[in-house]
Structure formats: structure tokens, C-alpha cells
Image 1 (cartoon, rainbow, N blue to C red):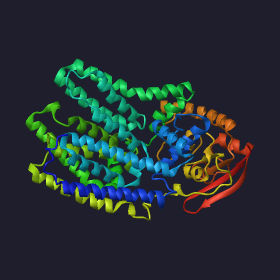
Image 2 (cartoon, helix red, strand yellow; image 1 turned 60 degrees about the vertical axis):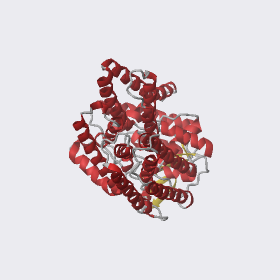
Image 3 (cartoon, helix red, strand yellow; image 1 turned 90 degrees about the vertical axis):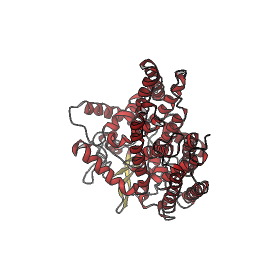
Image 4 (cartoon, rainbow, N blue to C red; image 1 turned 45 degrees about the horizontal axis):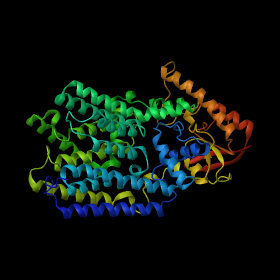
Length: 531
């Protein structure tokens, strides 16, 4: 590894920064296992866990997604953890999340160290861990963190533009990006960034035929994981469920067209600003580095041969998610922020520092700024032992049901913690009310306009889901059905559920048992059902 480029960095400052961040990371790990053991890092972990539990219970491995809108690979991870740790091992989910964070930090370290030396690599790894410790939603065992492990690995394998590089090496890069796509669809945008760079750089260096061959190798390889999952699900009769999770449900997200693209983006960024304030120094540095980078590229006439341009293009692709995704949560920005860490480190400290501060003095200032930023963010992370108030959502309240642990149950609403805390397994993999006609639409979705192709596809899917639910209930009948007000039925409804198939099932198989009323949080009716 080349140690010269970042020679201006103070090793003492870098090691202090690393120790501060690692101490904060270890402290939070201990807090999560001891004082917050009954809480997930983020509620989506419980959605993934309940879906995985359903798949394991009925032998559906992998499971097609339970009519959520994520790729299937994250459920495979949760099924593997449950196969080892039993039903809903929250501690094991947390251990896996922390280990994944360290893996991504190690990948950043190797990436930066290849160009700037070990000291700079450790600084880059510390910066990535700062992203994790500042927000539990980012650290959670979710597609964003899992997919980044594949993206960072893929970028490490990107070979040079030498004409003698065989297509199979580019195919390996595409395959890893395809694994990221199988965790979440939005990793398509970093992949597109890579393809833009690859086409331009290869064409400029070796001509269009070489560029086309490399694009085909990467593109086809990237499609392999999703095609493999699609084949498995199609053979199991779950092809429509898989297609709905991958394509249709994301299409139902609310559009920014109602308020306009620019205004919608501004509203989403303003909502995120409070959560991402600790990261403003990183994002500001990224913007300044980009301006200097492209300015020096133009002056030096480097074109597609500019150092680190592949990482710049992939990172810009990751930021496109801000424009392409109708709904933005703060953990959605993690892939772009993680890649921004790599770009800032490479461009400031790398072997060909296109945007580098001049001389060792400038690099010393980089080290000082990184230490100050790490101290401020890490020492104030997550609000101390009391826990982050952002996690105390109504969806994390719970209630003890009378059903025995391991029994089948069905919650008509968005309340996965009820399954987890009672040790219950979903009686169907059609888990969410939005999968049926008649249910109130969730806040993040909107009904498609009548008569549109999207509306027809949704109607076909609804019919399929009703048949699927009844088949699942016949195979694994629920002992308990819980209908959440505002999600499974309207508050003023006189029916057990506004979803007709569930209303009929409850009328024929169940009786009212108890009313759950947690003021200010949730209200639901529990029905005891015949087995």
C-alpha cells in the first residue's frame, strides 16, 4: 500500500479519532444488548423478522417478501439468523448489525488505504462508523447497510481500463452490484453511475466495442441474482408476489408530482435536516471536494481518465435517490453518505489527489477537523442510556396476548412487535392491509387512478392475495386475529374489518376476546379463533 500521499496526516490524531469512535461504537453495542434489549434498532427489523419467521415455519426459504416493497435478500439474512438463534432473536439481529457496520468500515479502510496509505484508510473507516453511531436507524440490520457491503466490495474489484482485462472480471463487479439490487431496488442508481463511467472511460481508452463488451458483462451479471430469485419464486408459484414486492408496491408510493419536483425535494430535505445536522460537515466537504475536483479536471483536461472518477460517478448515482424516491427517510441517505466518505478521503488524500489541500499542512487540518467532528457526533450520539426518543414510536408499544408462544396469529395492521413480543408466527405471508381491497391506504401510499394500467395490476394482485390468504389460513389457521383501528378498519366502521375477506373469516371462525386500548398509541380488537 502506498503510504506517501497522506504523509501530512498526524498518525496520533488519526489514532485518537479511531479510538474515540470505536469506544462510542462499543459503548452503544453494550447499551443495545443490556438496556435496550427489548427494542429493535429500527422498526423495519421487526417487519423483516416476522416475514422470515413465516417462511421458516412453512418451509418457504427464501420467502418472496410478504408484500412489502424490498428485495428478497434481506429476508434470507433474517431467516439464517433465526435458524441459528430461534424465533425472533433480537440480540442476534443487533450483533449482526454491529458486525456489518464493522465490515463496511473495513471495506472503506481498504479502499482508501490502497490509494492513500493505512493512516488515511483508518481515518476513512472512523468516518464511516460516525455515520452509524449518530443514528440507530442507520445502524439497523436493513437493506441500506447490507447493500453497501456489496457495493463497496464491487468497487474494490473494479479493474483498470487496460484492454487485456478479461470480461469475467467486470462480470464479478456486476454480480456484486446485483446482490445489492437484490437487497433494495434503489441500488440501481449507483450501478447506473458505474455504467456511465465505464462506458465513457472505456470508449475513450479502447473504443466503442470494448466499452459495449464491458457494459454487457456488468449489466448481465447484475441481473443474475434477481433472475435467480425470480426463477425460484416462479417455480414455487410465488412469481406474482415477488413481482409485486419488487415493482408494483414501490409504484404505489406517493408521488411528488402533486407539489412539483423541486418543492417536493425541498420539503423532504427540510424534514431530514434536523436528523442529519451532525453530518453537515461531511456533506459540505463532499460538495466542496466535487467543485474542486471537476475544476481541476477541466483545467488539466483529464477527461474520463481522471483518478477516482468511478467512485465519483457511483456516489453521484447514489445521491439521485433523492430525486427518484417519492418517500425519503433518513436511512435512505446512508449509501450516498457512505460513498461520500470514500470520495472525500480519496480526493483529499489519495495517490492522485485531484482536489487535495496543498501540502502536509492542509492534510494536518483534515486530521484535526475529522477528530473534532468525530468527538462532537460520537459523544452526543443517541441521547445517552435513556435511548433515542426517535425510537419511541407508537408502533413499538406491545400487549400480552393469551395465545401460546409459537402459535399462528394474524394482525390486520402495522404492528409487528405484537408478533415478536408474544412469540407468534404470522398465519399468512400476505402480511399488510394494503395488499387487500377495502383497507385504508397507509400514509406513504396512494390509490392509483381508476382505469390506469397500475390500477388494473393492483386489482389483479388483490384477487390473487385473497386466494393466497384463504389458502394460508386453511393450512395454518390463526388462533388469534387482531384488527387495528385505522389500519384494518376505520374507527367508525361497524364491521370487524373493512377488508371483506377478513371480515367474513372472522364472522365464521372467531369470536371477540378483548379490546386493546393504549391511549395515545393504539386501539385494536382481539378475536379468538377456532383451530
